[in-house]
Amino acid sequence: MAMESHPTEDELERFLLDQTPEEELESLETHILACNACVGRLEDLEVQIAATRVALRELQQEQTAKAAARERSWRDWLTVPKLSMVGAVAALAIGVAVVPNMMQHGAPVTETSLSAYRGAESSVLPANHRLHVHLNAHDLAQGPVTAKLVDARGSGIWETASQIRHEEVDLLVPSIKQPGSYLLQLYASTQGNPENELLREFAFEVK
Amino acid sequence: MPASQAKLCPVPASESSQPNQETVSRTAHAPVEWSVLVAQVKAGEDAGMEQLYKLFSRGIRYYLCRQLGPQELEDKVHDTFLIVVNAIRRGDLREPERLMGFVRTVVRRQVAAYIEQAVHSRREQTDLESGVTVADRKENPEQEAMIRQKADLMKSVLSSLSERDRDILVRFYLKEQTQEQICREMALTETQFRLLKSRAKAKFGELGRKKLASNGIFSVFVRAQAGR
Image (cartoon, rainbow over all chains, first blue to last red; front, side):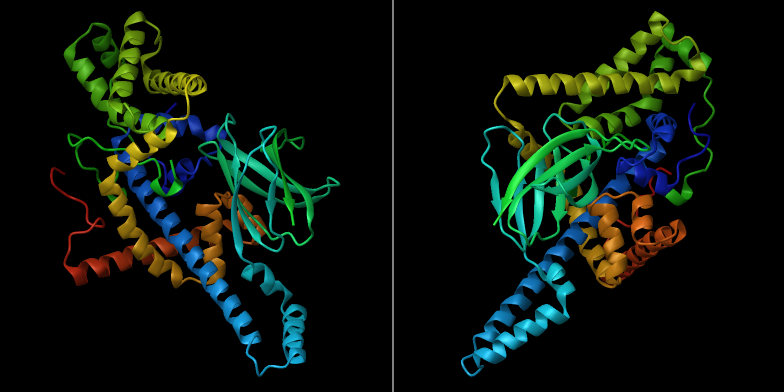
């Protein structure tokens, strides 16, 4: 049965982001197929969402670049000849002790792609770097997933919700301080189902 | 297809320009005599075929493009339309009032069939996807330009937001987290979340109008009114 009235902009936006609840999808899609006006709204919204993403991504990159520049200027300051070694170490100790939270946000970002194929060489990634990870999700259906980071003992360290889009999952993983072996696991996300299915695992080393 | 491109599908020049959101009537679809339409299609009457095409072709084109990309789109729309017509003529549609749902079912099956065919072809051949992606980009230069223009304006708006508000938008648009997850993790109500988004959009619209006024350029914020 088609929707009695046009969908709201929020409903159309959720549709474009593949977040429409299952129980609403049928009526929404049926409406869109026969409503030129709403198709026009969707096309405009697509452009707006694409522009928002480009803008947000560029702003993030600019912030990352500024943070990297600030880090470089810190290092340059510490090598000024007139500074005593004791003073330099003290400044570093204060920075680490007083503002530990800033380390996470200021940490450089390493970009990497991970594949789960057997025989593929395990990736080695730097410690204390945030990881922008592209997970190969070839042959997995598009849709919501949960990504979990576990250490060699299988203890969970971090997890987030994400989406499989175009056979890939894009994640920004917080920096890992401890060297060792880790796994990024992808679980199917189904609402209300506590036993989510493990779809794929990606191994990597941190050094 | 990269997220920044979205699945932007070319709109045929023959399509009439669309009313903007504010002028869309809240009541959907002019009343259609489904049983008359179906009877006309069954009988092979041109009027019925024409009305069916006018009613569904744009929606079918949009849906197929979104799911499958713009490659060979017109052929796929045409094939899907034929499947609908032939199914109606065979008597597969028992209740004319369910025509819209019936079309949806046919379209979804077509999408599944095309995807299965693509997966099968990919397994048989070497990877040719990069070539296809390059072709997609060349097909939407206008839309790319539109996105770039809007993104530049959007950056001004987003820069003026607090880091927290920007983080909310990053979670929603880049990380594609659901509204529920964002509200839960950031201790927001649904209203606060919606308010933030609508404020950002309002600022964006206002900035766009100011830019239009200062540049005196016809921009993407003013839609063509011809033919309405």
